[in-house]
Length: 609
Image (tube, rainbow, N blue to C red; front, side, top):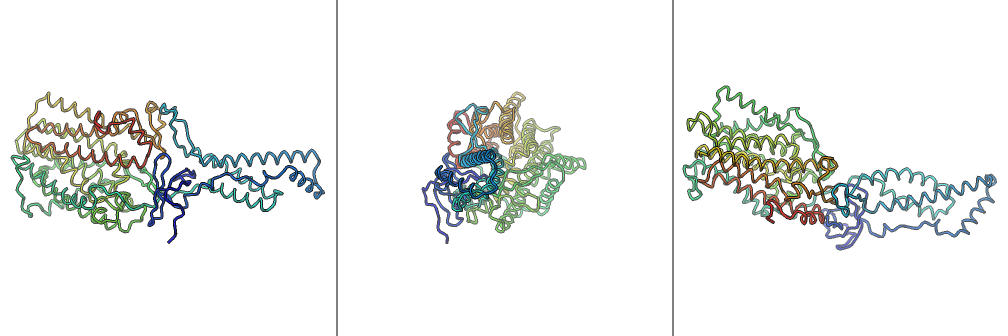
């Protein structure tokens, strides 16, 4: 077993991933299994580097060449001896020109050497023109690459000239060492990151993950059974139904038909193809953006069914059976995902689901982007079957309310719930590309947590208000409806404008439209916005989400707390996700994140720390 070269606490020079620049780092720990050093940069950023990416500080000290230390008299005598042995020496004027050429060549060598050593320092730009903070700097790898490309031809010319030098072989050998050292800074090689084991377990670790696997399906069943009761109060616990009443083969067949119909829409060659964020190995996956087209095709299919008098309220009559079918399918899908992940390469595993514990990895997801050919399973399930199914379920509840209560038109409460949630779904599908930068896609693996959440929790829990209104109609006045509508519009405006601001800044920080935004640069090359919505609170999109969730529940009145389960759950979800974001951002951005937290002290709610 190879021994480690650098000890804990030792200060060395570490190469920045994806570049040829070396910075001063401190070794904090060493992984004997993956043979990786965990190092800490001066700005607080922690990374895992291979031993070949670390070098001792002594190897970066400038070396003095032998030629510069030789005395003038020796150089003079050398030239004298050279003239006496050369019968074809040119004229005096010509010799003076050659001497000037050699001096020019020496100056050029010195300039190249000094410039190459300058590459060891972080390249910085003044960001005053971006954010009004002259003390802040931003890393610029592009300028280093251009400089290296300019230096490379000069180094090659220097190497050719040195072949005809009159210095001793000993001097040439030392020059060769200097040249090879410089060459290591010119060559640009992609850095492959080897995923290490997940050390920090979330969701309560193995025990918490196991409890969640049992608790989530039980919660969905409990909520739906409560809505079926005449008195859906918390103290009135619903009776457990017979097991045979929870399953019907026809319902499961309809669910499978729905799932594969959405898969066919996903595979249609319509919509643009975009690249996601770089993976740990530097590769970028391609995604087809056609969710909105799939929604239009689904709406056309539903319209055709209604035209041929298909009873859509069948979904309401067998709602619990549909939920059980979706849960069974998500469990089978999760088992398949985990089994196939056991054969996945190391670089394709999720950074948060590679703990080595079966239950935890099964729950959080072991593989980051499981694909069957070009069919991305996680990306497909994130928006298609569950999110579009949510709208279909709401429509079925609207039709069921009209049929059960003999209404010529839906109630005002049902119209508000359907309209608000339809706007939310259409917005998500229209801005489908923005999901590629979310934590679900970039960090979380695809396991039971996301499979159950996308296919069961979203369509059957998010539609709880519409399901509740069918059995518990609530009458609201037009002024109340107008006030609720204004509240939803405020939440949507905060949600959409903050997300758009963030996504536009990520795509092109130099966009003139964003010139008024200030940001704190980080060592990763990204900036942290400190003005606009992101200077108001750290997660303004979460604030807009919670305001909209409240607006969706208010049309159900205040007789029972059950319709407000969504907003209560959503606050807990976003507070937990905000804590995960804080943890990941602190590790990723280091001191820059601490500066950001000082500038923006409020997390989700203004004036609440």
